[in-house]
Image 1 (cartoon, rainbow, N blue to C red):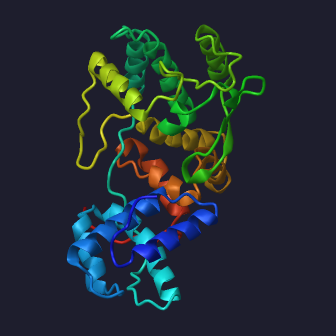
Image 2 (image 1 turned 120 degrees about the vertical axis):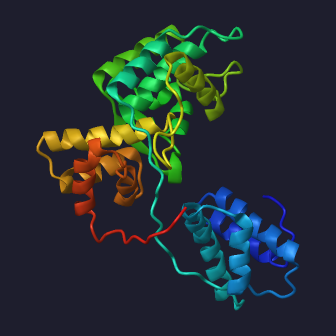
Image 3 (image 1 turned 45 degrees about the vertical axis):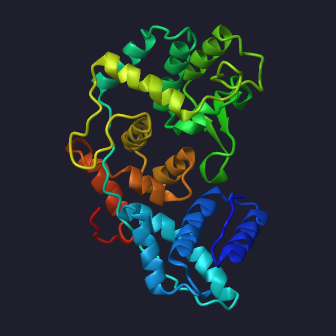
Length: 322
């Protein structure tokens, strides 16, 4: 655990230990409460009390975007309630709902074709003769499953059930585990990939092993994806304000849209489809899927309108500027 030096150092450590003892991860708590600790040390808070002025001053010190401020406040709010439970005066802000205003890039069929063709044509660089093959497999996993990048990069061979066509995700975001079914064609590709990489029987090996046999970082995949974009002639620039631009996480947004569209084409109602899709994607609740449907492109207006109608009243919204 990092060191805390403010007047609330003892309380912060105690609070984090209690969270850890409950079985939850504390990395984000340590980051955000560490920032609060530094701010309190800078201003030299003389007494154990956090009033509204102090809390607002800390938020200004963080200089975060509105969306991220809500996330920061959620960690502070828990700590403030902990202090109040122990008789220490601490300002507890309301819990606002912030509207996400960034727009993901949704790949067109032409862009997907270019990405896969370019990826399959990659030339090894710096004696790294396995990364091109690994990137070809990685992109197809992201495109076909909607998996998060870190979930895919940290897969082990043993997490793939080749017989039943499923992948087990362990300790994913929010410490959630889930099985995801995969298409038979993707399953066959994974089999051929594992054989060609001499990994088929190495159940403990990373599916994408680094030269030292460990997991690659996201930075490895992002580096190669940048090369793929450049070689494919695709510019990684936002077309409209707040668009994320071309990145691997946008495969997940595209998967969500296509899954919902396919469900509707098969005659499923949103009430029937959304819980399954939310669970498949590893969302804690359907509010996460609601966020993924905010595309902002006319191509998807119908799907977005239908989903918004379905979730109307479930998630109150406020107007904020980023």
